[in-house]
Amino acid sequence: MSLSNENLKHQLYVIIFGTHTKAGKIFDIALIIAIFTSLTILVLGSIPSISAQWSNELRLIEYGFTALFTIEYLTRLYCSPKPSAYAKSFYGVIDLVAILPTYLVILFPSASFMGVIRALRVMRIFRILKLVRYLQDSNMLLRSLLGARRKIIIFFSTVAILVTILGSFIYVIEGPEHGFTSIPQSIYWAIVTITTVGYGDVVPQTTLGKGVAALTMLLGYSILAVPTGIITAELHQEMNAHRALVKCPNCSLSGHESDALFCKHCGSELADPDKRVVPVESEKKN
Image (cartoon, rainbow, N blue to C red; front, side, top):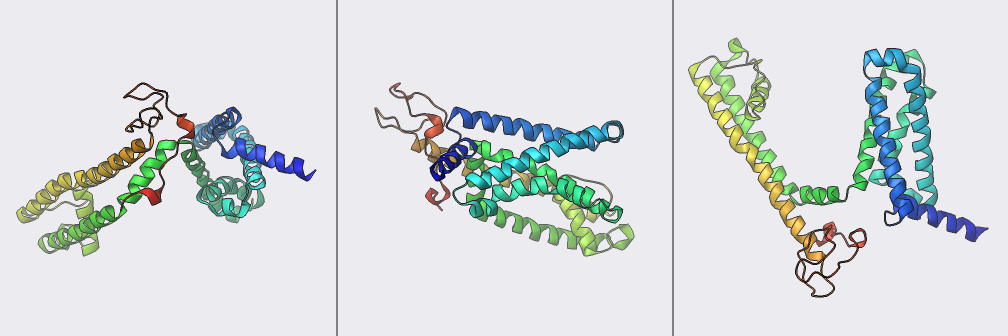
């Protein structure tokens, strides 16, 4: 009986957590379809005309999806070798957050709490984060962002200092009579201007103030290219590191794309893309 139970857990684990088997791929596709359908129901429920006519039907469908995702979450806990580790993991928390709001609506229907509960139901949008686990390239992008985190922090720190200086200048030049009532309000204007958003709710009136505004706009166009270059460089390094792991078993040369089936040097068949090793964060160079 115990052996049968262990076999069941192993089979469920391979299907739910694995992606190399046919059953695992079918499960992943079905779950993705369920998540997208659930999100569609959430979006439709926020449209007043549709909600007024189909509110009961949409609610029943949502309860059905909640029950489905609850079964999935409990099954993951059941077949996971370390249930507590899964429950505390990023995806475990996301899976739990995705189903809790609906239960809160059911358990706390009191009118005094309804405003808060209805706001919490928007948390169901976190279900879309469950899709990240099925996108292999998302891990590469995440590692690129993590690798560039120091440069990005320095960049945003520089921008924060810059908008503080520009906001202080425009506050001194324009003053409250032109809408710049405080330094925080002026810093808000500097952020809006340097990001090229330009709401226009606060604008400089003096010639010197317009000169500062023009300088801020030109700086904004220059600054926008910086984070793009940082992330692109890190992503390029990550892609090269990933290609270096895909080696031909015949000629031992690397540099192949992650989904390549044959060697671009000698034409020999490469390993199955689904079974290749993906570089981890510890392998990245600082």
